[in-house]
Amino acid sequence: MYVLYTAYLFDVLVDFPVTQAKEVLVRTTVDISGARDVVTKGKAPHKVTMSSWDAFCTFCGVVVSVSLTLYLVPLLLLSVVPQFRSQDLRAKYGDWAVVTGGTSGIGLSIARKLAAQGVNVCVVALEDKLFAPSIAALKSGYPSVEIRAVPVNLAKDPAAYTKAIRDATDEFVSMLLPIWVRFRCASPTC
Amino acid sequence: VLHRRADCLPNLLWYCLSSFSRSVPVSIVVNNAGFLRMGYFDELDVEGHIGNIECNALAAIRITHLFYERMVNEKRRGCIAFTSSAAWFIPAPYAVMYAASKALLSNFATSLAIEARNHNVDVTVVHPSYTHTGLYENQPKLDVLKVLSRFGWTPDDVADVLIAAVGRTVVRDTGVYSVATNLLGRAVDASSLASVIMPFRHSMGPPPKTH
Image (cartoon, rainbow over all chains, first blue to last red; front, side):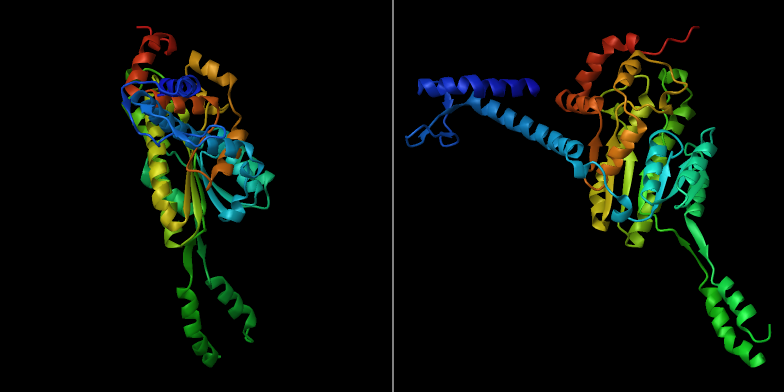
């Protein structure tokens, strides 16, 4: 397809002016006149016929151009435009995150950056030699957020790790403690 | 005193019933856990291969389901991000399960992204190039990786890219290798790519096992 794209560029840059200059190039043409109107200086637009080869190259060129543009332009914008190069996930989504593999490499970096934004992080990771120091570093580095650690092996026993993650992201909110306090201290008999 | 107790009993009962277990409102899920096993397909045990898919892809799907369901039920705006890899853009000999698992993950993510729009959940998948992490520890040092490591990214840079991409794009390729192989993969079909890589298989591969 890139070869065809080159052919298209060649066609546009070289072949087309030639066609234009010679005005009439009698080929076995598919006349889709009107498809390409060429405005020349001070004259009314005149129609240029398009050969089937031209049409084919144009088609390929359009396909490749659209494909490349749709892929590269967002990529370029995301990597160049300053306001697209970072964002506050806490403000956008909320203050609790789960990061798997969060004790080393990319995961640890993500956990750190989320914690730095004020997001509480539940780190799910294999309990290897990096686990304890990474969790300790996260806890001491970002004391204002809550770091929860879930040491599990994601390659084994799905039921066990699902339960562990579920448990770590649940909290038991009890109303018994306040009422106990109320009975003990608010009652005139105590 | 008795009168007071009786008065308080419904109150107490109400408080007992209203004790409940609730989940913390997780709105950001980053499925990043994964590992790489390199080597000849036959020389590594099959359960290890399946375990690789389990960890890299199926665990991410389970965890996504758990939290996506909560987001939907609790009507919470959220995001689910995946650390996939550029490894699957072109055939990846000697890391067959890694590439397969990442392909699964990326495909899953891009499809889910459309569904998740119904519930205001953003799904993003990032395809990093070579990154200087523990991924390649205890793995054969292939020449291909030595070359790629020269253009390697730091984990911090990839993390920045992931955080910036969330909710803005569905797929984000990072690094030269990722972009180049993506373009190559869409220009040349898989069969031709495999045929082109095939003659180089010996020079690319890990040292063969000495029998």
